[in-house]
Image 1 (spheres, rainbow, N blue to C red):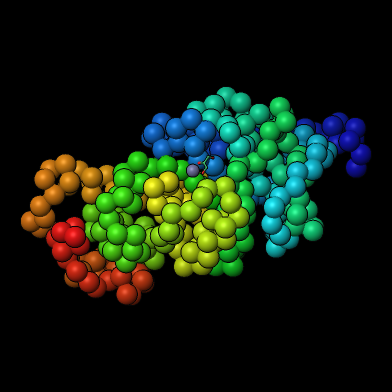
Image 2 (image 1 turned 30 degrees about the vertical axis):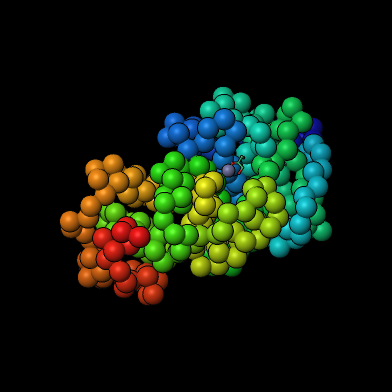
Length: 294
Ligand code: 2HA
Ligand code: ZN
């Protein structure tokens, strides 16, 4: 079908800007901003879409330009991503989606993407696009429904990366013991990288390697990466982790002395009640009082 036929065919007449995908992107980036987790141009989100899903929209079928990427994403060849733009402010995305987000498709050779919608002022995908795409590749091996990668700067979680040892077992157990929801929402725990320079393929591949075992990866002193099968799932993972980190901060503000806690037995009861298989080696260890005394 040529472009004029496409334009005249009512089946292809909807505008992608009005699609639920763009609407959700605007809503969630706004919520991330409202929570204070994406100051200025902080944060980035990518949302994998299929050819079937974008087909009904009339304004996404002409290639606008080709954008190089600095690693081999051929494992995602043909996939579409609605992605936030580099330097764009999350507080603005809902009002200017066609400027601050773009719909791209990964080219067969994996070294470039074609832009089909958005970035209308010449914009480019997020500086963390390699970390996003590598994470999508890794998570798709674990979960064929993998859809969303979300990065943001949750304040209490970042603070905790300065005051706790950067140890996956210890950080996971502290977060699990802050609130019963935590182990239910992320029974596999949270991956922790060393501090690394953002926007590099090195942090991208290190993040993706952690995504083999986790859906949440802490970037110490910087923020978090979350992967999920929907916007709600990725956002929900981050919300739950940050709520636990807020309780940790509040405990410190109340003097930090632990007099009672969610025990390892309590964690096991939660696992049994919700039929979870938490990471076994994280289920037993020091008490919260011992962990926080260091
Ligand atoms: O997009 O958050 O990590 C800005 C960032 C980089
Ligand atoms: Zn960041």
